[in-house]
Image 1: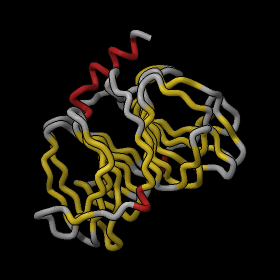
Image 2 (image 1 turned 90 degrees about the vertical axis):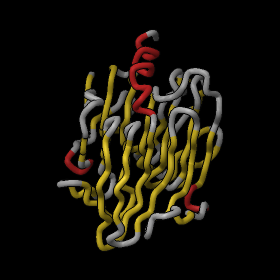
Image 3 (image 1 turned 180 degrees about the horizontal axis):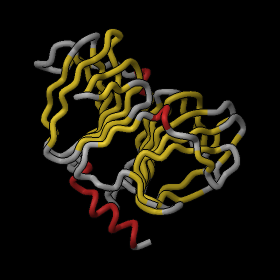
Length: 230
């Protein structure tokens, strides 16, 4: 399966326009944003767990990164309420589920194969800091290595960003709205920008908050090559 696989193009997906698709597990549905592969895939997806649903125990051969958008997600390592950011590195495993139901943003097979770092953050308990030399913009750093950087960005009402993205980027709107070029991005809308691009955007009248990942698009070919060895 191939979805949004031309990584040299700007991609915008309005999540409300997508239908929920059934997964192999009853009660777990998905909205694919990009995907290379079948059930084992390099994928970026919005996933919904119905109350009292579970997914079978599994190993993250290529790693799993997720952000809880709504509800509470669980596994044997703990509970992850809305705002939780988690990185389960390659070769980690768990038995996931949700007692009350949840919606989560999930990325698979987008790690360095040698990475063994677990990250578990409750971002709602983390205070953003003002971004230097940028009026009306705050940042909450979540993760950084030699390839990628992940953060939450908050813009006050009508604040603007004009940033170069030499290594590409993707963002998911968590709150409010953002006008980027001709596209109005609202809650759970997703934007991917290719290498050597720019973001020119303005927050709406209520401001905005979005999840931002940069740098990783320089490593896409390696990620896909690793997947194809499985």
